[in-house]
Length: 301
Image 1 (cartoon, rainbow, N blue to C red):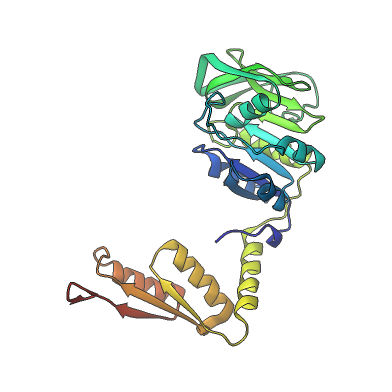
Image 2 (tube, one colour):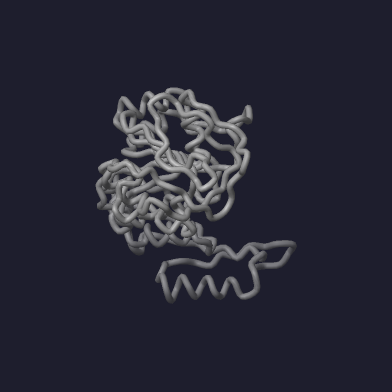
């Protein structure tokens, strides 16, 4: 079930997914700070991004190189739209390289490609947007995973951290409100990463915390009640999987026994799976349901 930005009471942080294995971890980390976050395809249209009305957009990492002809990128006009609408943009790993390359800088194949734990050195100048938190030291260990690196910054950007090998590790353009981290702050291998994200969201972006999953559940139940009405009944086909079970549970909370679940034993279930599923429906979830039989090769299941 897709979460509705209108159902929450905090600003939206929108993550554009460019294929990183850590993308959904970014979403989880931000939600753990009581901030609503959504993840959509990095190749989404500008209108699709704008319709969600995000306060912050995060460009995820990914396995691509900006030098590849068909490498994914944010849509045309995205930087201008972000500035016009006061949207803060943070690029992580590949996302940083996209910002640099698309805004007029230069990205090259790194002479010393960086993978794994690495120490970075933060610029000692005060009140940096990314590293303004007093809990973040001038030297910290982070998780790197990149082959390309920044060779020349776009106009208006400055380097605010470098790796121990001298590669660009973080950049800022506070006037345009564009920021970039070459490392992954969302993983536990970057011990101070969560504090960097927390400071960035609340102090730099001014994001409002106030989201929790209960708010969304209450809103979804209200939507279901309004959709079904006071008298209509609903039929739900239950497979025993997570999606249909969650959907059935929400609808049952909304309309009670006007929900009629049907569980079909198609003869292809695992050993004792039917019994386990039925027990879960009856004992744990108290869902009203019926067993249905199908005939496969003359055998009833």
